[in-house]
Length: 318
Length: 272
Image (cartoon, rainbow over all chains, first blue to last red; front, side, top):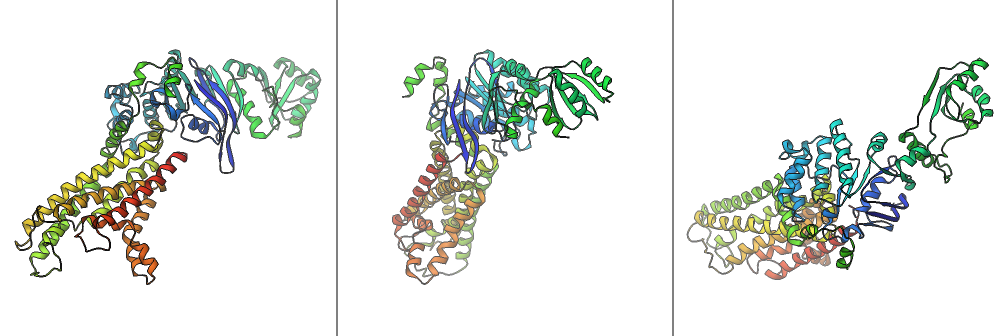
């Protein structure tokens, strides 16, 4: 269980995290999403006490991390795959980490085996690929057999087999009743791994809900239309009540009208269509919508799907 | 405080309780860290080579000359063994600064501090380990240098361990290097950068004393006499330096304590 309450972290003038509150519960995988610089890593660093909060509090299993007498058995964290001395072997790094808690060497060998590092364990970490570095970071996180796992971009740099392994591992750990909190920029990955998602943008929480809710809150199924006469088509479709979005001139995203209906309307008016394709919304799009708000300074409203711009806006961008 | 919270968190297994962070465990971890990087082995080997090399060099040089009056109350055999310390200290200082500076440059410090979130015990454990390793290796090197010197020097100049001051100078040499190493770790922890740490200490220990004492203002000279190199009295013949044996060493200890306090406050307060 991780409880973050009103966490604010400022670096000089820059506010990295701004009054964030959320709870990460045991037994499920909780994803932590947000664009670069949104405050994900800062929040995670504050959880394990590496960064001091400017204000607010963070507790893990009921206490601030630094007050646990056995922190590695409470929280296993992969925050930065490069938090290792490059001149030391993976085995010796794990040995040094284990020694701080009196964790036996048998456990060191166990996590080396679990993470598939046997063949490189005696090699110096400086020569490791990004993927091997990630595996070592995960090995360190698992060392104390912790009740809570904190993984910042764990699949970053892993090969497809490694990605599947992390997915299975995190799900298995959660199924054992542990708290699993992982960040990822791969939304598709999150959709397959996480049960619950916390979305952060510009240091503020944008959404904190089950994955299924986030997807349902998105635009839902729609139709993508590409046409040199897009503005004209917008005028014709507007009376039908369809919601129309445009990200670039000549490209429309239409919600609330079937592709057959759109095609017929266009044909009747003699409008040329270059593309007419039904698209289903994914977690990725839901996430883009949520974060688009924070990126573009739109006034945030309660309903999460408010990032959709209006048809008038679509016409205006041309 | 902790017992109440622990009993509340029901999922805490008795197994967790076995794996607590303790100071001896942090010391063990620091021993593993120090002995599993190549720079340690290289630094200590170079230090031993310097101490033995200078003892041999000085002894041979003295044997080829007829020195009747050295202006000292001690036989030459006593001071020759500790001659290399002034140079060997550079290597020890580098070792001390690197032991913490490399943790910051590689990011290892974040692993260290997440395993030991109280932070200050981890720093003190590192200082203790560096000090003990420096002391033991220096002591062995200095005894070896002493016997090597006696084997080379003409019989009129040889000393024995039982002679006054001899044992104090040899053990003092090792003590000086051990405290210097701790000072270096503390400075490294303050600046969090190997190059900066080494520059500061080399400036304080090697460059500044010579400069300050040659400046013709009395107050500047006075400052120059209270720099960390005052600690060299502990392995020098009594009465040959500005401070007496233990006052000089005490000045180095004070520098080290102050640096350690500053480093502790900073490591606790700063983001890692």
